[in-house]
Picture 1 (cartoon, rainbow, N blue to C red):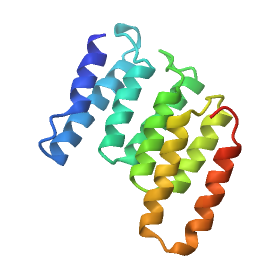
Picture 2 (picture 1 turned 90 degrees about the vertical axis):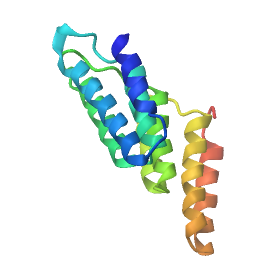
Picture 3 (picture 1 turned 135 degrees about the vertical axis):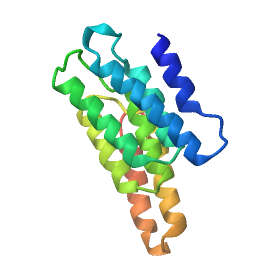
Length: 163
C-alpha cells in the first residue's frame, strides 16, 4: 500500500551521501515501526515492507541494523503480537545475509544461514552466494592459511540439498 511505497522511496535514497542515505533508511524504518505498532488503525507491514528496509540496510553496509530489524521481525511473528508480524521469508533472510557478506562477517552469515533453515526457510542460490561472498571478502583481507576454512564452507554448501 501507500506506506510500503513510501518506505521503498525512503529506502532507495538518491545516492548523494552516505549520511543522507542513512537518514532515508531511518525514515523508512520509522514508517515500518509505525505500521507495526499502530494496531488496527493501519495496515500492518508485510514481509515485502520489511524486505525493502532490510535490503536498504544491506546496500548501506549496516549489518547490525539489518540483523536487529530481522530479529524484531522474527519476534513479532513468534510472539503473536497484535497486529501479528509477517513470517520472515527467504528474501528477508537473503538481505541480511548480503549485509553480513558486505561486512565480511562470514561467521554471522553462516549462523544466519543455519538459523534460517532451522526456521523452515529453504535457502536458495542467493543465500549461498551471499555466504560465499562474505567468505571471499574475508579471504581478501586474511592470510592464505585460512583458505582451508573457505574450502570447508564450499564443501558444506555443495553437500546441501536443493541448491
